[in-house]
Image (cartoon, rainbow, N blue to C red; front, top):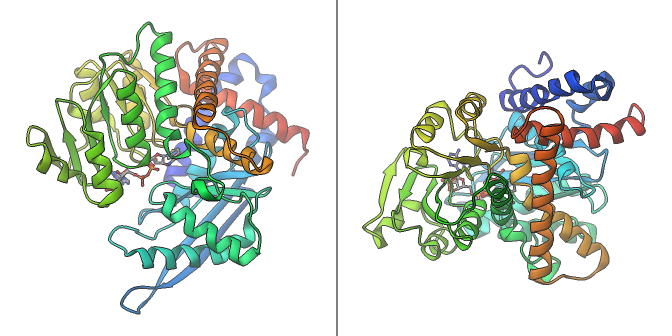
Length: 432
Ligand code: NDP
């Protein structure tokens, strides 16, 4: 804490993990080791760099770029890149720290890292986006590589941005390699990667619901966000028999009692790059509420898929009052600690993002395997592997929580299982 007093999101993420590790201390104190804990919270490497670029008016702009290479005990650093004006070192460190445990849970050999910039892609022309991505990669390329650090997308970084980043890396290194995941299908991308985080979230939630005697069928679902994770969570939840009634962006949320028309949302977000409020122009029976999040609507399942700390104590109270059964996170750390506590004290099942949204990075791991073997698997094959991985992650969280005397506290199971694998590798490799 004394070393980073202002890193509030990072400290929040560490606190959450350490709360769970207290359970190990009680049950198996021999599994905790001060040497590992002390090293675990300090990133192996943090890179901060200038990203200069020229806007459409010919004016020089400067943003700040980050890559935090947090932990490589079980594999190359792996984690997305976020472009959003709120990005700072605390946010990148919290995301990188979470990524260590998430990647460990996938069972694939990936360490933890994260990167990004305070660049705001909203309202920028395609040329400006490309200029920014090329400048960002002009520094980043010297720190990454297919066996060193393999970035991917996150908020504000989708297929278009990954394409520009990859093109610049290839040009600078004169090398075609699997250095990024989330690539286009014609240059090494994996089928289902675009859908993987949202689909994976639903596979995880389906396993959780099944284990608790129910399913998605006929459930009403609230989703926040209208980006990559939210769109494909909406699609899969609907395929599994649920009715999704909300989506949102940072300006407000829509409520459609008839179920979200996802084709329209995709058209607004992916083609027009517009705002979610445009939805009600086509569906007047739906409502748009400005400046609010969707948690006041009566639903059985809530899937926060936008950003960190977007579901607070007041939102949790509304959800409980309306009889919510489960809250499963698609975003990273969307639920505040007091909200998690309130949900659990009121019998709501809660799944932490590091487990329930691990489908994206798991599929990225599968993309790395395909790139390394110079082949590509069919959509069915990848989707099947993704579902298997998500069910395995759910079982691991459930069984570990139970083993440590915290039945159904899936976040404790996730933190302990994720930690133990990394800690074992760190110990075996000595104090490095
Ligand atoms: P996108 O950029 O595609 O979409 C983000 C969505 O969240 C948009 O609807 C955006 O609205 C909204 N949002 C962003 N910031 C805020 C904010 N401060 N307040 C309210 N709404 C906000 O990102 P993704 O869908 O890829 O990512 C969403 C979440 O999922 C993030 O937490 C990310 O870390 C996590 N995640 C993503 C993975 C992936 O594979 N993409 C993998 C695992 C986790 P607006 O357009 O108004 O900004």
